[in-house]
Amino acid sequence: MKHIGYLNVLLLFTLTMGSNSYGKEKSQFSKNHYFGETPPGLTPQPFAPGIVNTEKWGDSVGFSPDVNTIYVKRWRHSREVEQPESHIFKNVANQWHKTLMPDDMLKPFYSPDGQTQYHKSKYRERTADGWSEWKSLGQKFEEVRIMGLTTSAEGTLVFDENARHKDGYGTLFYSRLIDGKREDPKPLPKEINTGRWNAHPFIAPDESYILWDGEREDGYGEADLFISFRQKDGSWGDAINLGSAINTEVREGGPTVSPDGKYLFFNRMVPRTDDSGKQQSDVFWVSAQIIEDLKNIQ
Image 1 (cartoon, rainbow, N blue to C red):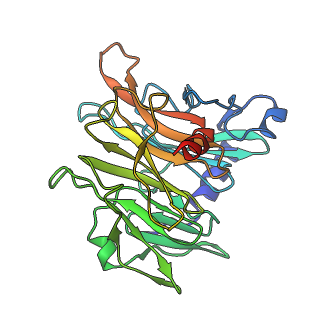
Image 2 (cartoon, rainbow, N blue to C red):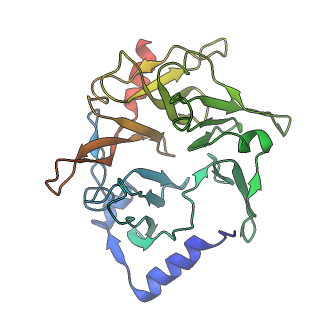
């Protein structure tokens, strides 16, 4: 199925037929691409309340490499509710325009240079006219039930396996690009693949660290965020819990660092606003300085 040119079509529709625009004074956009929101410090804050975080389940956020396009993909939190709408937000002339994300459109995972998009076991490359057709990473990738995939500047892929349908244990894999050839997936070492659940990885563009969420007996709650730093000998260091400033007794997950390297984004379960007593997943952000602080004390 083709997905070429969706953003151009949607943006044209937005600008010609009317749209919802989000923004503050234009001068703020020269300093911050994130809806003009005040940047967070070392305490996580809800990201763009009323825009990204609404009464609907806001479970996944992604960015284009220039941070001028933000994808918000939402899923049903139970079978009893309707499928919530997913949206694309695009910054045009310092104003944010909101459009619906088509149901059959995939939230892309970009390579750091923006020339490749990934979704599960497939990828496509930027062309002069937009994007190529989706191609398979290979049979070995298709055998893994991939949820999230991330890539370094050197082309190393790190991705997860949704194993809850099997034994409840998630495994994180990697695959390097060596002399232009993609190697078969391999599990990351036990320093990372330990515990009852490992998923939603993010590898730094320079491969200096990997972030992910996992469930471990010594954690703060249902699932916590962890990080492993690349050691001088090229190995991966022991998993480090991001600590009580990030992790709580509820579930945290889906870590990703913005393309400009400034902020860590993740999900956290919070009480729903409908007085039902239930929870929903909201997006939070925090200064990426916490990663440097952890690196300095490891």
